[in-house]
Length: 85
Image 1 (cartoon, rainbow, N blue to C red):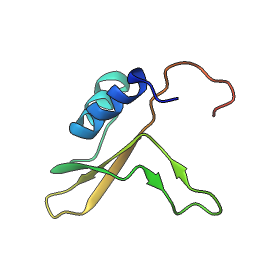
Image 2 (cartoon, rainbow, N blue to C red):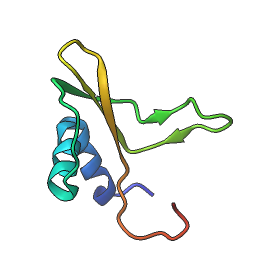
Image 3 (cartoon, rainbow, N blue to C red):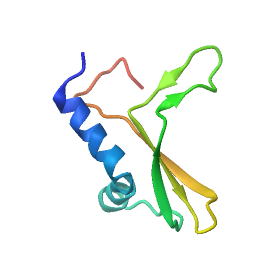
């Protein structure tokens, strides 16, 4: 069941995809490659055989030439689920 508590954070990442990088740097001290732009991408991960997988959001970061340098997949978890890896 879709809830506001799940959907609101997703919308924040979609409207401001650089938020994913900011949180990684500020919360876990991640060192990320330099980038010039970022955009939200499709959350459908369809190159998986035999099933299609979906995540909540994908932010794609590009350098000044438009080449993708890294991406961040965001999956909202509202609680612990020992059945999920």
